[in-house]
Amino acid sequence: MRQRITHLLPQGTSIDPSAIKVTDDGLDFDDVELAAEERRITIGLKQLPEEIQAFLEDFHELHIRIASVLNHPTFSPAVSRLPPGLHAFFTPRAANADTGLCDGLKKILGESVKCSNSSESFVKPPILSERFAASSTYQFYHSPLDLAVVSEVLKTGVCAKLDEDSTLRTLCETLAETSSATQVDYDFDVISHAVTVTILWPPVDRKGISRSRIAAKKLEPEDRLEVGILSPEKADEPEELSMGGYLTVLGEDERPSLHPKLTLSLPASTLQPPKQSCALHAYWTLPTALFIDPYQLSDPLFLASQNLLALRSLAGAQDLEAPDWAIPYPWGSAALFELATPSNTTSDEIWTITIPTHLRYLNSTLAINSQTPLAIPWPTVFWACEAEEGLKFATNPFDRVDLGFEGLFGPRTMFYHVPADEKVDKLVELLWVPVLERGSEGWVGVGTLLAVLVGFAWVCWRLVRGGGGKGVEGKKER
Image 1 (spheres, rainbow, N blue to C red):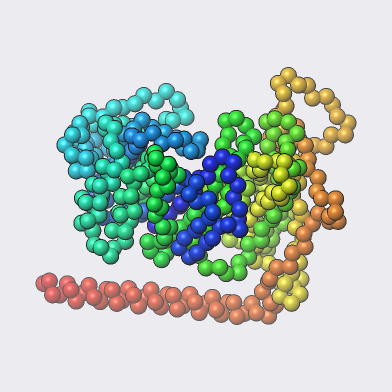
Image 2: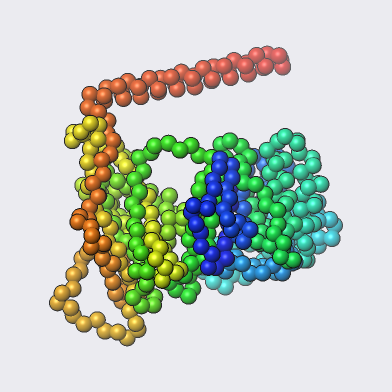
């Protein structure tokens, strides 16, 4: 089970990292009362009661959206809205097949729900754009209702029937605390084989009173719990939304790991774009010893916490498991990042951007005291700006082409490079990294072989023990 809790602060709110207090099961910060809260819980299908599993067998996908009838103030442009009421969008497993959707809704909301399980009871919305060709097949709507109704039904009709000490009971009671929420979404599809519940609460209620907040805690020790603090930032384009802030994973052990991080520190006052429609980028070439994990950099919340907008391009060595000596590319990889910029470029604060990397296993030939030197070049940082319509590019005898990154942009792009600090002598970082001592390779082989044998023996023992138990039960049945 995974939980992600995001605190959305209003425009213009600064986040002081020193004011963030993190514990094993919670997070607190000074302006928490000003923040809206989105809580997303992802539950594996097998973790749900058998009754719900059987209900979901009828659907290829099911999306239920419940919007409050209360007029909550707009606290973030990133939050989309629907008319008040219950909306259901779904695609059955088989074409024109009946589902148990209406029966399920009537159990929760009563017989006033106007629908039957036949597919003829639902609207089939037209698809006018290829962009949304994968939309759900059917749509259903129930008249406006308050989220307090659903909350009360969950408490009395569902949660009360579960064991008091069970994880499902705790989870159910959390989902039932939605009476003050703006919206609640339930999403299921057969590909993910999971149900995702998303609840969004405004910072205060209609009377301006702060709501009581649910503590951030894991329901099971192995659960993953992410907490983020985000606030809007100035975007480069009118149609873009930019968020910045911090992300932490609660309760994870702190241990040494081979994950070097590149930190770019720039005075906020120097990050004023040279013109409109410019975006800040960093182009970085890495040796084979280091690699970037593109999957890690696909999470928008994680990117925002590092002041990154996106990994725009990655070419070269991308094997996440291979050691340095097994990389087919002789030199490494090249990456293009789009960087976030501060909303206030007149302040004297230092703007920090972090790019996480991972270290491969290295050859110990050049090791000194179990360490080997690694030379890491600095990335080049530049603004990429769209040229004005009709502008003609004259031939420039001093122009440099084939730099590796210009082909990643459109033909009408101008580049403005950001120089490094003049006080710096070299644009290369020398990093000493640990390697395996020479002469210890044999112990690694022996240890690996021993671990495999122990694991194999344990699996065989479990199979024999399980098979023997079933055999005895079979004799009793006969």
